[in-house]
Image 1 (cartoon, rainbow, N blue to C red):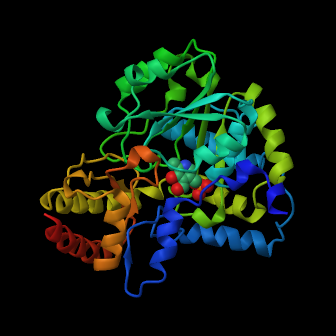
Image 2: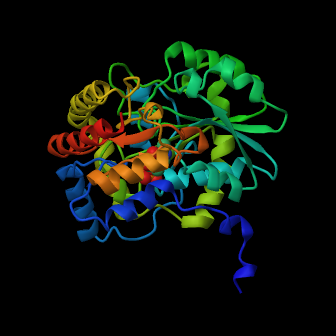
Length: 385
Ligand SMILES: Cc1ncc(COP(=O)(O)O)c(C=O)c1O
């Protein structure tokens, strides 16, 4: 019967991040720097809000786009933090993590053959959803461009089939952010084109030496942009599964149908916890951000001193050094590092073929783990050169 299964689904590969994480569990004493989730617990007051919701039997369906109070809190949060203006009533949907937000966006805007531009290397969660929606991913190689999608790099890839450009800044896996000028240039290029922009801003609270800026706040871009955000990274709430879409009403009214028939609504208990996060916990990310900055600086300096080539990224919790000088493919490098020194990193090719020649290190780990793991990385690379 297997031949009857949708070939498009059969072709989807398990993510390279999961593959390496699964392997790590078979190696006793292995240290892992692979996971993209905060090592902090969800703040206590948010957990208590979730507990109260349970005790008060707030365990029934909510409105499809989410509790109105939560959408109002989300509207205030993005206005106050990033200057984004979205109406709670008809421009915001509470989703099951940012992942569902990406899915309902793509399924709402894509038709068969529609091209979606992605700066690569990039988070591997988009391509399967683009393909399932009938779209065609078109990767733009950013390796010679500071790992950023800029207007001049993007322009030659735009065709009359381009229906969407995905921006993921701060970036997973590179940690790069776009400057105000780079965003303005992209906005000028895209403002009069018949296409949408999916701006995945899930790491917006983790921008370090600067402020987060969204393309949706520039000129006419608000009308064609779907902003995706959520609480997984900002409030250490990956398992609560709360994300958001912020998009003009003409788009949201259609996205909400896809969401409704897919999940009905996000978990009610998680929504009450999220309400607490976005009212009494709007600055909960700040102490975590401080810790990430000092870890980033530590890991960056260590890697530099070992001879890795890398830029110091300004957001998210990843470093993406080049491993080219060691003469191994990203798979060989990651496998040998795991087998010989028991440290797991994600091979760059998990972030599309354009990630070949790199590895991703997550520094969402304690200082002790980072120190030990980097000692082992140092021992490993000293054998290679
Ligand atoms: C860029 C990016 N977008 C979306 C997601 C998914 O987020 P969520 O856990 O809220 O679904 C992740 C998770 O790692 C991510 O890195």
